[in-house]
Length: 117
Image 1 (spheres, helix red, strand yellow):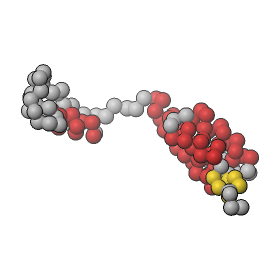
Image 2: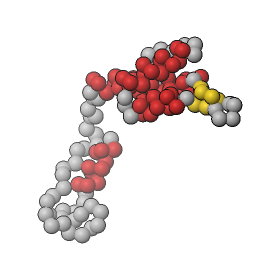
Image 3: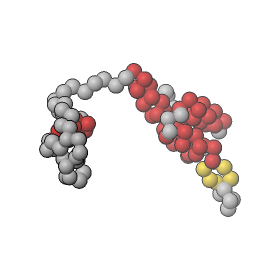
Image 4: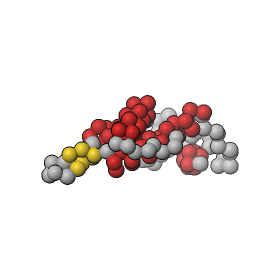
């Protein structure tokens, strides 16, 4: 829906004016036609739902790992495990194939029951 709104705003600009400066452009080409806001949204690709499921699962695993997988801190306490932090970074970057198996292995190692996938 946001895309359609932006396109509608671009289409409302006067022909031959730049969107940011208001100065005449050297091409003078007309803006792209806007798609009506009432147009139905396209269904997400099949892989998108699998990725969102992996993202949600990876986020759950990361939260559990931050809570239960700890390493020795400098003052005798405990600190987040740096490898777990790296795996959470992998989750955030979309590298689920690398992060999920690592987090599952670490959580099983400390006796945590994994959430349903």
